[in-house]
Image 1 (cartoon, rainbow, N blue to C red):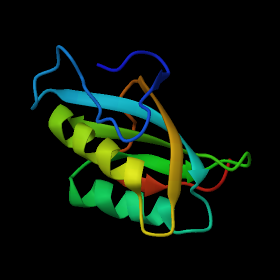
Image 2 (image 1 turned 135 degrees about the horizontal axis):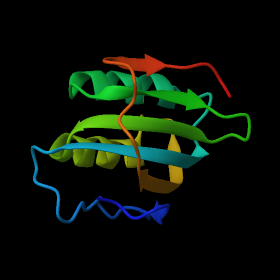
Image 3 (image 1 turned 45 degrees about the horizontal axis):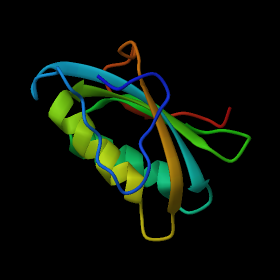
Image 4 (image 1 turned 45 degrees about the vertical axis):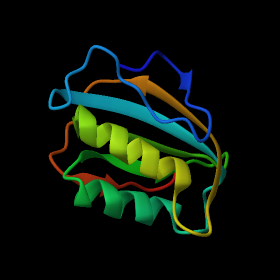
Length: 114
């Protein structure tokens, strides 16, 4: 699993040592950069749904985006790699990740700004 608040940097991929590719995993991420007003949240939700992940994503009033992704570890790794790039108009400058508990919902939700 990822260490608490691990700075994933860019463009380094996520590594989850000790977790088998098909083991369930959950990760909480905070994303910084130009990630609001550019379709980042909707794009990430679409990608998470495409990968069959559960969780949620929302904008924060400080300009960051936060999300929880839950599913097979290999798909979490893929989602975080995708989220490091984002859609064409986004510019991710930093991403922090920490392991977390699985979300209560059995779908992927777009939540309102917090």
